[in-house]
Length: 288
Image 1 (cartoon, rainbow, N blue to C red):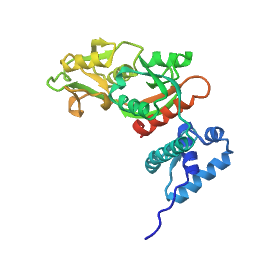
Image 2: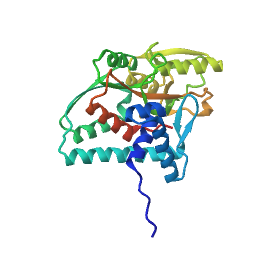
Image 3: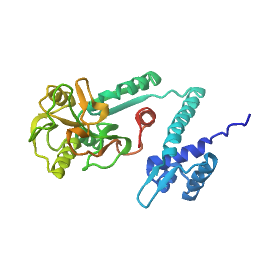
Image 4: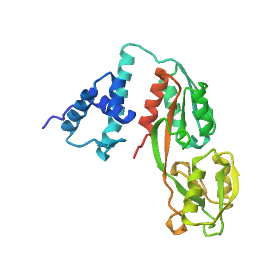
């Protein structure tokens, strides 16, 4: 029986850093490697697996579909390597993390945060909820160590953690998508990119609309939609009981994907913050 080739952790680390930093130069700076060495590492890894792993142009570096699959394994392997060293050297992670998250992300974050606290009981995790625009300001001011937010046009930085399609959602038992003007349940102006994208799509399609309900949180907007008062724009991970995706038969314009990003405070992130970020990448990162 043929022996399975062994993946080199150093090559995998370089590959992951290229993706995370968005380029060969930035990856080299983080790893203290020359750009030529970074390129050589990627070439060796692609030769080993027999597939092209990255798509490159002047402005971006993106994983190929095969690269995405390998990246998920690479993150797990690198993380397991770090955990092995911690256990062998009895180097218990400790400290404090002040994490900001929007209320909208309650659907997929608690399980990850619970796993993090079980794995690192000496780390004090403080979770602060708020609007994405407010959380970014708090990270920049130093009152938060990192924040998981919906990327805003006015604050395009951060590291992309997840991309999701934006979809129209309406009540399961109410058909109001054909009303004119279309009643909408949205956040107030200036605080949510979902609102901007939804209105821009409707205006581009020439569809009349009106704001029927303005909410300050996902739960209040979903309640209005569930009651049949309006439709809204959400990501599939935010759907709740009584609310469904409206398909093409509803006659509503297509919506773009949105990006969920992690913003870090000034300076080098603490080790606990880096570990939390790694776990978020491993558990909920699905960059496609």
